[in-house]
Structures are given as C-alpha cells and as structure tokens.
Length: 120
Figure 1 (cartoon, one colour):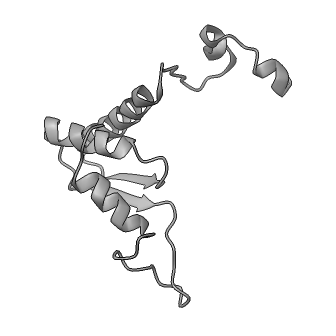
Figure 2 (cartoon, rainbow, N blue to C red):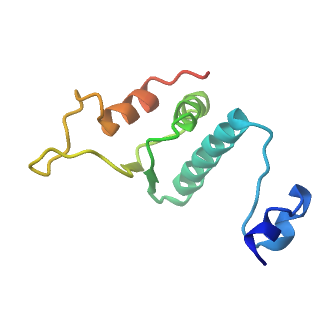
Figure 3 (cartoon, rainbow, N blue to C red):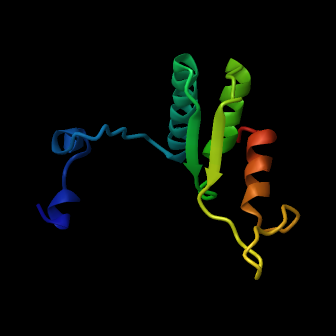
C-alpha cells in the first residue's frame, strides 16, 4: 500500500490495517488527557506487580505532564518507583548537563511541569 493510499483510509477503518491499538481523539486536549491517563495506568499496573516504572519522556509537547501530575495527585498514585528519563538535555562545552537555572534546562522544565501541575 502506498502512502497516498494509506492517507485515504477512513478513520473508522484504521484498526483493520494494523495490530497496534489506535485511539482517534477529537482534539489536542483529549489527546493529552489520554496520554496522561495511559502514563498513570502504567504506573498503577506496575505498582500492583511490584515493578518499577521507567519512562523516557520528551520535553515537547509537554501538555500531558500537568495532566499526569493532576491524576497522580487526585488518585494518590504512589510514584516512588517511577523513573523518568529526559529524552534530551543540553550540555556544556565540557559535556556536563547545563544547570537547572539555565532557561533551556529540560530537567528544570520537567520539574516545573510535574511538581507544580496546573490543568489548562
């Protein structure tokens, strides 16, 4: 199947063309809530199994993280065994991560988004 043909598949038929679960959502806020819910559900499931949860997370887009933090707080989800790894981080000329005080620090951005959540 060519890319042009794939792009013409009606939304309701997408799941017939793959084994990968597909969720079609009406807008970006719904997408971010869906991602946050999946993140929370993964932590909950791993907690029940006594396993740590490890996530590699991008710093962009970021709207799912305040949603995730809100779910964690509302449902009182234990995150002691949650490990997040930033997908990227800027380094100094010496190869060390830039300080969190730097405006381009991804680590600082993630702390702000996950520790001080505000739903938009």
